[in-house]
Image 1 (cartoon, helix red, strand yellow):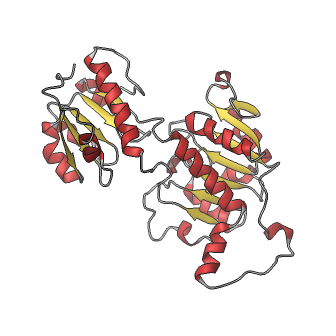
Image 2 (cartoon, helix red, strand yellow; image 1 turned 135 degrees about the vertical axis):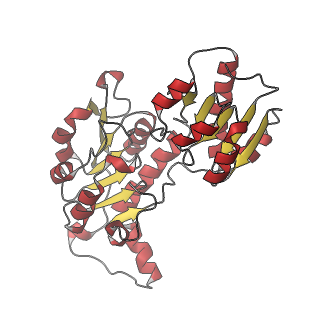
Length: 322
């Protein structure tokens, strides 16, 4: 059980997100404070009954968290938390899954459009004051999305929304999900994740919207890239470790696939020596697919719902992890 409302203390921890200030605007009367870096979090975590955190978390902070009873992740991913250690301490954990499902799907669609319409090249040409002429080579022109096949790997909240958006552009959508029996939603067909290799050759665009787990780590490796069309594009708004990054860089450099839209990388930011930076057919955004002006409020809505459930003594939380 967590303390009652009048004695509860929440710590909000993030390098940029204005969680504490936005929570204050709700006038809940709940005591709270915000920290902005890992050192400050380590110093002050002992004051918190509830912690809202994502990237600043380190498992060794548990040694200083005597009062901690509940962690609300401020991101959908929770692979940075040791479930075993939290369970041993009796600390509950919930994710922010769904807080940014709409906007991540929109970002994936934006990457697909940017790749198809060659917008990165246009921006580069603008910076160089180059007005590109008409192109005779059909393979080098901008393309249309209508009639193209989009393979969505992970047909959950984000992937399902992306499928809906793609259908508005008259694309054919093939979905992969762990349990195909849960339905195809707006996709034209749905298959198990294990059928990836069989359906990859059909795709003009492959979009990763899946969680990171044992099944999806390095899901897109050299073998998978080799099964894609040379004219196909990869879009990753999932997790960097879902892709073998070295194999992707080689496939892009060799023209084995046409290009990639990448919002997540194994190391964030990538090392300055990473070949991804300089590849003209790679479009990189800095893990911003989920960021919007409403993100803090979306997360706080989930946090407040989970606090209410805990105070009522309910065993199930929204986006339960531990």
